Amino acid sequence: MRARPVSAAAAPALALVVLLAGCGSGVGASSSAVPTGSVAATRSSTGSATGASSTTASGGAGTTATGTTAAGSAGTGSAATATTSSAPAALAPTTGYATYELCQGTCHGSVPAALRRPLHLSSAAGGPCPVTINPDGPVSPSTSTQVGFQSITGSAWSAAEVTWKASGAYAGPILIRGGEVGGGTLGFGEGRSPYSELQLLDAGREAPRVSGGGRAWLTYTRLQSSGCYAYQVDGTSFSEVIVFRAIL
Image (cartoon, rainbow, N blue to C red; front, side, top):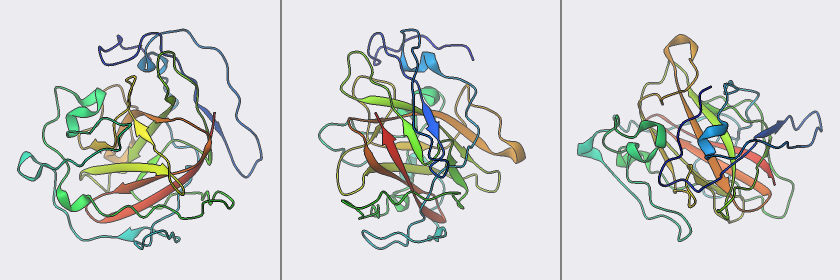
């Protein structure tokens, strides 16, 4: 896939390799050298789902359960329902759909306020990472239960490329947040300092095709240490927690 030019917000000489390994197979992550350039320059067409790990939220704080939690209708994203939230101190705030690098200039507004449900990430700090397999919600990442991250020149945040896909059965707005299980910060984006959340609606530029009229987005997840992490994915009618182990 053609590399995009380095954006002004991106750090110089950025590079990354995404390592995916199935948890059940016991294969660890590894890495290899890549040319220098922006984070975006290492994008590839390997965005298809590869057994993404998920634990679906029960909606209670600090708990997870199998299955996708149904949620009340939240409507569709528009400028009239635009919402933002305060970001952790280490992250830049997300201001709407246009914060996503491959949607800038074509997307307007923000996710509806109703999607901003309380975070219900797993509370299994100190124990085994509760990675789960086969997300059953309409939105899932391309990653496996273990994800390899690589350091980026000029940034304290390592990065891994993650392709998010939404099935054709769901055409609404998507809010993706996350963090380390038991505490710790997870961010998104290509810049030296990542932003706090992904707000997605229109399919992203350069993204792979999704059968059945679905959508896809090439993104980067950012963190600063190995450990057990989780995404929370909220749509108008569902809320799902996806748990994975990060390896730096």
